[in-house]
Image (cartoon, rainbow, N blue to C red; front, side):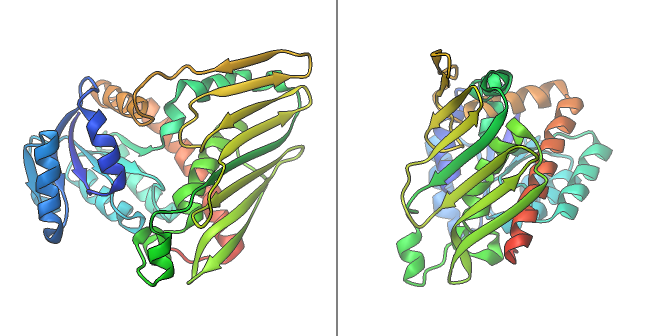
Length: 325
């Protein structure tokens, strides 16, 4: 994977220190706006990235790049991914994948027509701890209740309240608690128990955006509750309750550092199978393999998952009358 990074925000700064420890991943370029050139150049110098672009088309024409990591504001995901696919590049897109189902359908068609890899970067779906949870859910008996919460007092919240609105708090940019934090909970819940019959999202609105909210997902014999908050601190945790016991994850649903299993018969286990230095390492290892092996079946499986979660998220958005993008 010869990767061009499109964007220079928090998620990029968080992951790049770990990128060079991933076999098969080469940082080939970084792309941003002209006003961010100094930041781009500093990032490139720090991480040994050979090329800096402020023109996306120039980057996409570079034969040294075969994959684009889309890490820009949510509303731009579809546009950048579309241009990359049309240029013959594989695409790794940050969450939420896109803001409209028709955009994802179009991107998928482009990837299929060109034999390219197109995936959403959702770290938990590649973690060994989450796979262990899937394989051991039956030990809980009949599932009754799932709760997954991601709450934090955003570093941008005070500025937002003062009138300085960053993309993460701008509904026109696809921001808000549901799409920024709640999407992780939706991915985790869907990955464990599948698609719900009903979805209702109740947000707390401030300056026209959901700064926190609760999504209730209804199943025939199970209720799942996903909480997202950017306006108040946690704790964040996930709890899965069944007739025979409970699984507990302390921490937000984008990490899953460990899982505690407590059964009614007295059995208790603590699982911590992931030993990578950062939560995103496992997913990028998987992306490197998918691209190297041109694993289109895995691409399609991942796209099916992302499309289903997007459907749940958009049902939540519609239930609350929110407008994004």
